Image 1 (tube, helix red, strand yellow):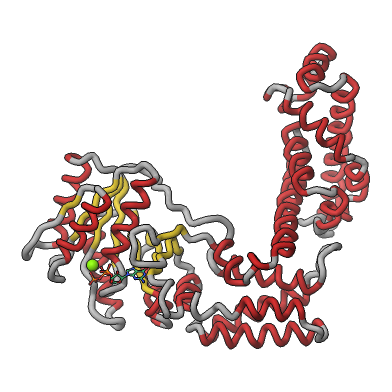
Image 2 (tube, protein in one colour):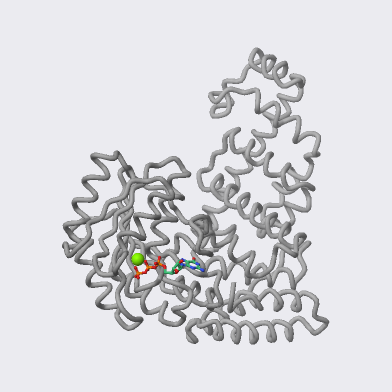
Length: 449
Ligand SMILES: Nc1nc2c(ncn2[C@@H]2O[C@H](COP(=O)(O)OP(=O)(O)OP(=O)(O)O)[C@@H](O)[C@H]2O)c(=O)[nH]1
Ligand SMILES: [Mg+2]
């Protein structure tokens, strides 16, 4: 990613530095600011962003087993992921069918190529896409998309000459859906001149969108647009809440990282990024993957592994939190809990990493008693239970216990022991809930509240 690739080096030199921690943090933040500004990011934004990193770094303590420097990088990672749209991949599966997508963007940004890429992408997912061009402005726009459609093997609609884009779009949608049975319709529009013409672009987009009521409007921005990406994306985001953004040409020499960050800073959603001229060169935007790459975490495997453990612990913590709030756990909760513990390896280490876990002393002790062996055994016991039993363990009598023991290759004793553990846990959760209720009545904050 051009423009931001030096962040990787900042991370490695920060981790290796022999300077004091405070000095290294200062140095890192200063360099990060320079890099982000050079990459075309809005200056005010850069200062806000780095300030929030510094504040978090000062305020939070690394969990046991995590070095302070590693913890700092984790904070940087989280902040970046948050900046780039948060957890999870962009949502690209249509919520309804048929689904109508309309692409807009300034001239040469890559709309026509991207329309083809999207058609291929959705075709490979098993949908039946079709392509429409409403571009009556650029010579050979018709042939360009027609050619792409025939390469991919999807239906195409357009009209040569001077017809009105709205008429073409309406006719095209009708034809593609009703005659060709397409369930995704992708509409390519004409480009608008110049980087300064956002207003006109957005006006025209609104007009067309009002007439055809697409399910989604996608703004295509190329990485070369630089600083302007911010304004354009901001206005677009204001105009159309159903809109999302595709960034093209991040493979080129442009400061793609800058354009990308500028866009996300507006709160607009990035759905896809394109990194080449070929029709395969499109990728669903995934903030975590993107930030991992940005920080060079792929080369720091052990650190990445640690981060994964930390995130999983967050999950466990959330689950414990949910149990306390509801005041009730089922064997399903126990099952999930045991499974994540097994996946993460040494139990003690994992538990120690959970922030705030030490606030639940009795729970920690109970759980630390579990050996890896026992976890495995109990998981097979739970695997042999019916849903009914998992949700309502009180129905498990001797007869059921025998069946479960046989099914899981364990003994009745094992089953009983697990049920006892479950009861203990349940009591504990209730007790925590009571305590918390008391605390909140007294106005004391505790246990993640
Ligand atoms: N390197 C690279 N080139 C791209 C990418 N996407 C599009 N292009 C190229 O950019 C140029 C313009 O692409 P078009 O798809 O024609 O752009 P457009 O927005 O439809 O242009 P107008 O219809 O004139 O407004 C073409 O040469 C494409 O091959 C990309 O992700 N990477
Ligand atoms: Mg075009």
